[in-house]
Length: 373
Image (tube, rainbow, N blue to C red; front, top):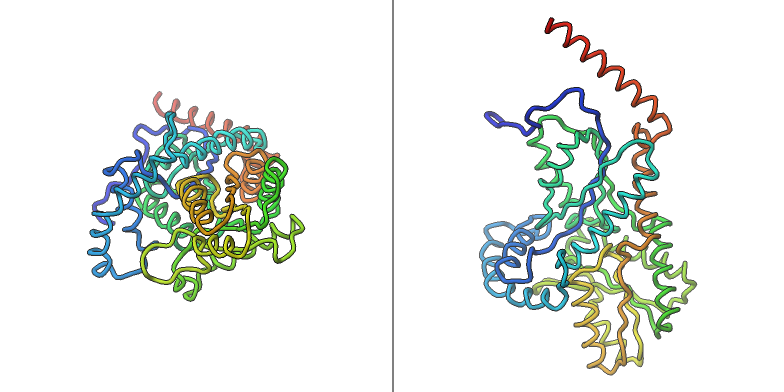
């Protein structure tokens, strides 16, 4: 990139101790439940070619039409779930609780210091801002952990794209490792099964359990995206862990947009069909969301509860996302430690590594002092 000034740390001290970093990435949230903020968020989200695989010249006028109408509807939806605290956004609230808990857990497990940061693919805190924090902490080894259990080009790959754009501007690139998915990891399945059991113990068991995942266009599946298959596997493994018969659970896909066919069956149609088939109490969990957000708290717990009741059902009980549950945090820490293997801060040899680094720094300072004399 001719003429580009690459980003570094002004006044960087070359004897600064190197650090290990972990970057958590989730999808994103508007800064406020108001039309201007929602419009900014939707523009960034819907301008991502990973999300909308369509020629830009064709998509651009469609996007402008969406940005005229949808922000007001979405802002109203966000207002129904917005929190009365400093975080506001439920996704940001739960993501920050996850961040704090994982910092503590990794700090306990790692032999050396570890810096844990949070970023959103769209909105704030942004990936560039998180990377700036990691750079200031002299993070030289970085594990990127997108909080998307099931891989999709629309989510996981998009996070990698944005991170890559930021890294293209970095003067000194860190060593990099990237977690693609964890849809069938034993710890993740166990945490989901535990959360369902606890819900049943507290509220009684419904007539059926529905696993509702976020949808994507069906043509992405046909083009080779593994998301659909990974969602199905997650649901099968959780059902097996709970000992459920095949007729006791089902899978559906929510949040479709536009007229194009998306992954089927659709959640809104499914809850209506189940009610009409005689299901009175329906339990719904959304395992593709690591933290509760608009799509779980408003779309599932409110909208689809209404659809279910209108079709004759008595109650749709939403089972919360894993959020900062201790078993979820322990799993995320185990997942991170697996990918951190071989790096000094995660190994028992950290003390020898740190001692060698201190000795090298002392020698460097001595040489510099001699040169000044």
